[in-house]
Length: 422
Image (cartoon, rainbow, N blue to C red; front, side):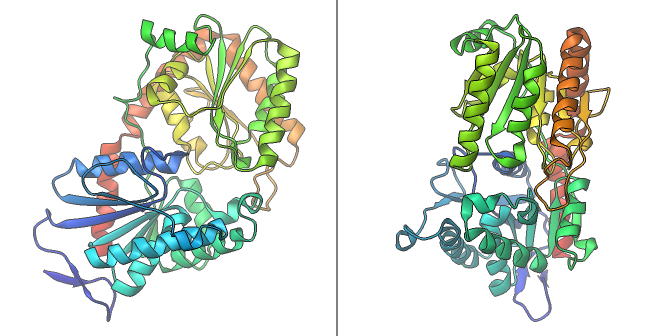
């Protein structure tokens, strides 16, 4: 049959056979260019959708993605080489939108503001239903003005325009859904749906083999000593400066392992360097900072030997990183903000640290010293009983398997695609 997405627009190609639905996924991040949770999500979602017989997927990604069938990369326009980064982004969006319109997919699904405008233009011109996955929100990240300068106003405009025009918005948590509706109150609440991020528990599982121990040895991590592990980019939202202050209070025999890189700005890099230097001066050689982006097998090796994994984020729509740690059997200490409490269960899979935050969108604690102290208390509680932490880690893996499989998430996503085509 032929159906129209909206009155007066070109018909969408939908047949009675469920094998004909073509989805174009638009993203800035795609392997090997993954910097955060959104990139992980897109990679895993595309893989899960491609495993189905009823969906065909074309990935359109910025830069030079992995060479694979039905994946196309888009370089920045040379004419914009010296332009503001936000303008360079829109140049890529225009190129992507032109290809989407030529391909005429049934649905276009964009991820993050970087690709939202390409989806919006494709929908506006071609009448193609546009689905957005909300991994983060520009109004909730005002510190990005440091990174983009005046471009932050442009990225905010792009995101707002795309969200208001979208046929459906996927929020990766109930907390994110609340944030979407608070940030953009003109959106029909009925268009905003919760589909959680997921984890491939076959790829992410505990590894304490001799090879994994050798990985730790390469980075001077002792697998037989307690360790606190952080994994994340150096951005305001990840809360690393608060964590570094809190770790001054943990036992000296505990290793602090920081898998932390890709700073957003020179300012936050300098701040983190100073805090790490002070921590090292106070604690000797028990602070290991690995700034390079490690491959999955090495990350798994580190997580598998963690006594506790820490997530001090002040803004986190869901937090795939917590699922990765849980799947590797690590207990988690995390901030009770955003979608994190939908993943980490207090007293069962870890500890949730309370936080009262200012209402300006930055996520800044109202009382930073109190938050730092509370985080330190939770980490010390986890370290005080390694056997209990191990039991919580096992419970975390069981929860990751039962509640956050990509098969289930792909099913919910396809249901949403079909709803916008109905």
